[in-house]
Length: 189
Image (tube, rainbow, N blue to C red; front, side, top):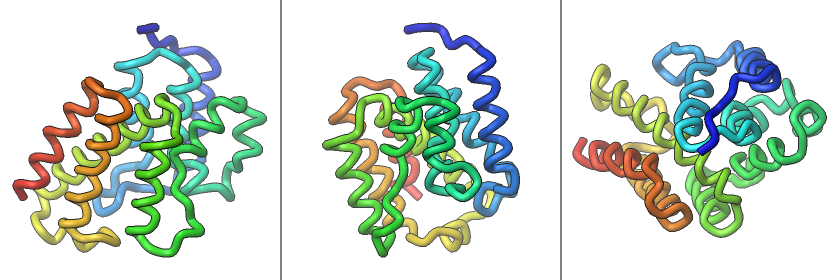
C-alpha cells in the first residue's frame, strides 16, 4: 500500500469539503458533518494512499447533498475526472421516489457497476455511519430510529446488504469485516 501523503491538493480538498458542508451537522448529534467526511477518508487511508481515492472519500456525499454549492462540473475542473467519477458512483439517484427504491438501486450499482475504489469508499462510509448510529443508540435508546426515513428493521437490512455486496466485490477487505461486526451489534438491538 502507498502511504498517504498530505499534499497541497489533499489539504485543499479537506478545506473544500469543510466549506461545502459547513452548515451541516450529523442527524440528532449536532456533530459537524465534516467530522464524518474526515473519518471516512481516514478509514480509506488505512487501505490506500491513492490521493484521488482519498479526495473522493472526502467528497462522497457532496454531489448528493450540496450540488448547488459544488457541482460535478466544478469538481471535475478542480480535481479531475477520476475523483468526480468515483463520487458520482457513490451518489444515490434522486429521481427515484422512495427509500427502498433508492437503496435497491444503490446496492445494484455497487454490486454490478461501481469500480472497486468506489466500493471501498462506500464500505468506509457505511462503517462510520453504523458506528455513529450504534453510539447514538447507546445514548438515546430506541427513540433514535425516529430520525430516519426507515426504521430499525430496514436499517438492519440495509447494512447487512452492504456487507454482502462489499464481501462479493472486495473479498477479505478488513473494513468489511469491521462492518460485519457492527452489523451483528445492530441485529442484537
